[in-house]
Image 1: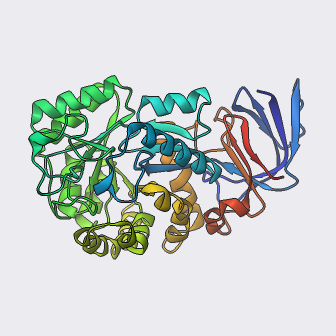
Image 2: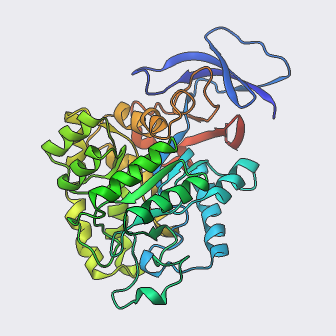
Length: 411
């Protein structure tokens, strides 16, 4: 890999409200070695003149499911080889939308991460958690109502590629240890009811407090953290008090649960675009009526929950949660939705700085700074003037770089 000098850059990241104009950036061994307003000289360097374009950090999507190969999780019993091939395509497309890092919260494993790291797949950095943990009848149990547990194999007992079913303290401890053994960066727990699952309600609490405490303890013992799927105030408060670090969705957040999140330093990861996607295309792709009815229950409060979290200074990340080929294509539209209630700087912070902290890579990801990975995007328009330019990456992103390697160059 050649060392690079990027010339005449206007640097934009969420550490400052205004661009740093006319900068030079030296990239060595996949990292940013130097940033200067004066000309930089380097040995054996190739120069790229950005000619006044805006240079920003690569984006991070903190809630994806790259193995959710189909829109309808109720019918996700596909061969593993097909799921892997589809996951590779999803990740390649994510990278070309400017997402240079992703956090998978149910489904991805060490094999996909290894394929990315080795260059076999041209995809984002992959922070995976293995299969999410669900109780019997929980949000990760996609078996039909008339299915008998004894008729399902151990490896596909949940009826989905993204989750595994565990019940009781000893089983959850063993499951966490197993995901840790396989290299998980975090553990995802289905702590409450959800939209896609056929046999629960949105307001269900799932897993006992003892089970969640055991999951958190095992994760902490391994030096990783727990993310929890949960919508309701009661579920949110319970999770953060038990030590869960990130709350996924949180659409029905209220004042008390927002205060609890702030007090415990928990992150919120909203995923607005999934509800638009399901509402628009769900029926055509076989989403059951019961799930479609639950969509509006959470969709109507999604924007309000972000405003409430901001008011209580909850740290907010950026996620999408999209499913299948149809859903994944809408990933960048999350910027359009978030722009309705947040400033460009807030949205950029969520998708870069805060998400870098969520994946435990503060200072390495989400910034244009010396010592950070050279995960960079270049575009004509300042995203701090209009963050929705990131919702049209095919037109607006002219350079996409990950680790100093260029994946798109339309300069």
